[in-house]
Amino acid sequence: MDILIANMTADRFWELLSKKISAEANEPELRELEEILGHYPELQNTADALSVFQNELVPVESDSETEQAFERHVGQVAEIDPDFAKLYPQYSSESEVESRKSAKIKRWAISILTILILASSIFILRNNKVSGDAASGKRAVQSQVSTKPGSKTQIQLPDGSTVWLNASSNLTYGDNFEKKFREVNLSGEAFFDVVKDPAHPFIIHTSVVDVKVLGTAFNVRSYPNDANTETSVLRGKVEVTVKNRENTKYYLDPNEKVIVANTVTPIDVVRPRRQQTKPLVSIQPLTYYHIDSSIIETSWVDNKLIFQENETFQEVALKMERK
Image (cartoon, rainbow, N blue to C red):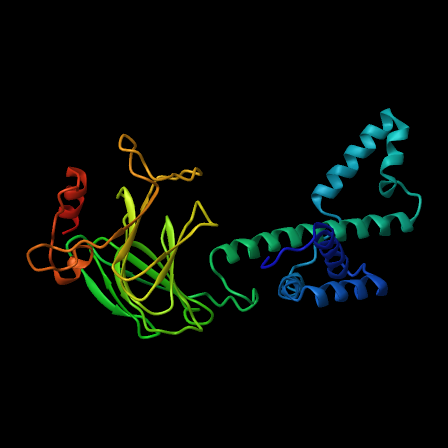
């Protein structure tokens, strides 16, 4: 469900709904069910959907072959142990009242089984991004833009922001873009020129960091096979949150970049000594190419492939592969 509901309330909801569907609920129980639905309106869609499906079910005959076989089995065991028959009085000839109780129990069992099956179906549909109203089945729309190795593309988002997507990258955003936040998911590398809109912050989700801005120009590189995730700011300010350190935020000014190691560790790494490896998080200035003063971090946008002296052979190979 969309919000957390107390376990006792949830259990009581299913119990009352089962009674209502099997026509066994009394007036106080029906009023109690309505009160629960009033406090938790998101349960109303579930109750309505289950009621609709229950009305379409074919009634189950009470004297099925299975029922008859079980009755014979009880009779055979009762011949050996007469007290055993007392456990199943509905199969004796005592009264129709007991028979009606048995039928009532069976209706309860059928209703509960139906609810469990249908509730499981609704849960699966929700996990497959079926939105809001379970009865209508309206699917959420997910827009996706992907690039192959050696190709790049430029797209414009619904708010007017422009994105340059580098090779071997993937960008997705939902149909709720601009409703509260302007959120996108990125795997790979992209340069963003974001339209300023203080009422709707722009957030980029990667596997390692979340980048939040109001209006700025910046680059995010987050390839799954790279050692680091890097955010570089050209204009404006950005807020970077490392996902395995939720309480730590980094604020970048123009001409700054933050490098985050893609390895997951819960330990805050301090500034390294000479013999230590690279820190988990490092804030550095942007680097400029000495020949034409272009910014190396965003040189790919202009179809330039520039290598730096401190890059490893593996990093160079990955760049060449994407180019």
